[in-house]
Image (cartoon, rainbow, N blue to C red; front, side, top):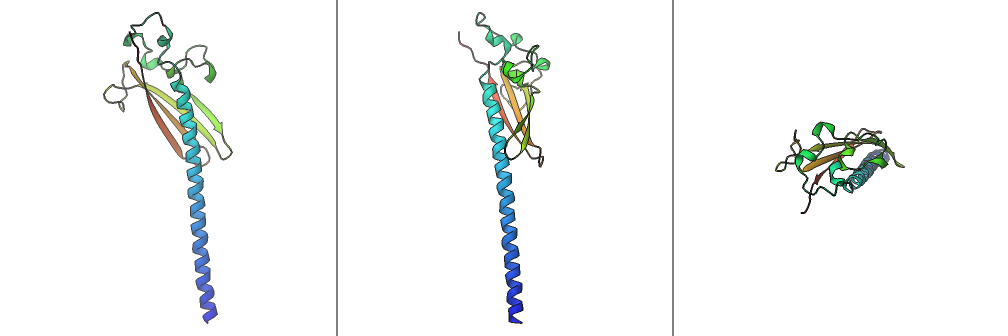
Length: 160
């Protein structure tokens, strides 16, 4: 009877240890995929930040650029002839950009959205042109549909 009781206690203990080990493995896998997603989104944001604020920013002959020179809010995105990521030449070309990235662990779908935002409230989308654009990059893990997103505000600065 004592042996049967100790075997029962041992079985319960082993089951609890295995359940905890599986829980740690799930947490580890989830953390690993989220870190990968963060790395992919931040890498895409770094690429976008290296580009000029707007197409008109390339014109160095016109130093007094005003809001009316910038791309209309409804026209943010790739320009004609920009058929690939490598051809992007300004920040808002990333609007509606989508790509698939494969790592050793998962396949991620990256989706980008660019919009003008209000100067004093950058969480509010502006329906008119401003000196600030927000890029939102979302990484969706295709295995478990978990998603991570990062946002970046890009401002236009010029000096006379």
